[in-house]
Image 1 (cartoon, rainbow, N blue to C red):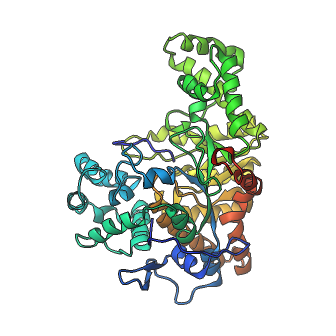
Image 2: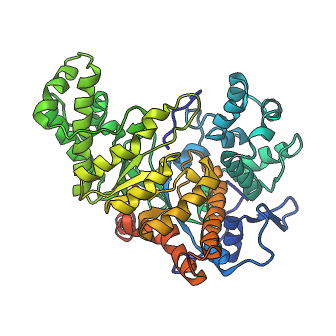
Length: 493
């Protein structure tokens, strides 16, 4: 997801984690990832709390899911320095525990009935813990059951040792939040606690973020701005190319892909938030006149804007394909609340098949399982060679539907057509809880297929590494990208 804003990490010192060559987790990391939480408690002793009730004896399948690291295919994380040297900004509105409730679950709170003023209090940089808890307390029991609520609850326990929020424990959360936000905490939270090998970040701040941790926070080229015609001059500034016509702007797009294509893992657009995905392959000679009029200051009519935007979208898709970058597209459910046009969402699957037909050499990564139209996405994955379905965000939109979806995918489509995790968060802390929900869901899906006789247990175990890690490493060519990112020019490596 890429959220429209509707008002719009852990024990102190990083520990040394050991990872197997196959991307396995240590026992401690696996317990954290699977819902068995090992944290440094108030006395410094390790406590073991069960968040999800386990089977009496852990199966080999559950153990394998617990040990296997995720490749996280979608986040919106800001750079770690934006957290450790915090200044107020819309995406990181506060520097306290309220931040963990600033993304996604705040929508559930508003839908449950929380007054907008109380929601704003919760993420205010100036309100104290007492005031924030007073705003949250009446509404927390109504959202703790949702996928968004699960992610926050599990993160609070894994990171701060707090299982139940109340007027007393919220003070512990507040103290431990500040104790953990320090240099190096991203790698600790993501790698050691969430069991994540690497993340793919779609920056909401830049078209391509030159990350200070490039092999941990791999980046998409965010093509939404590139194919939004009104952003052309802003996109041109970094390239140093003056834009006087459409041909000039093509050179700007060429620059972005030439400069960052070798380091990017994908190209990403969330244009589905603002329009249908009915992208016509408009030739340049048809798009050039309205683009020139726009440069001259005329506001484009809706049909003219679509003509230009469609042309630029396909130009970006072709540049991404030349650079061997998959194209990620938001599909389905919208972030926020009180704003989702369901009829537009219902058209996504049919429009996607037209994109797949037009660009047979492009791999399209279709995000969020197009919930609630996820059965159609199973059919698309089965039918189209260039379609990959990404379960990012879906585990916390609807955990139960996501379990059913994964079972359908694995009995209908080739197993290399699914990616099973992306936290999709701006703050890093709830990624921990989301990863735990996803591990639980993967275990339930595979165990269910075994119990129903669709898979042998050994076949289910063999699927774990590909769907959690291997498919992503192949689709995004991560061996090659890791080598390039180890020597990026902007870090002086």
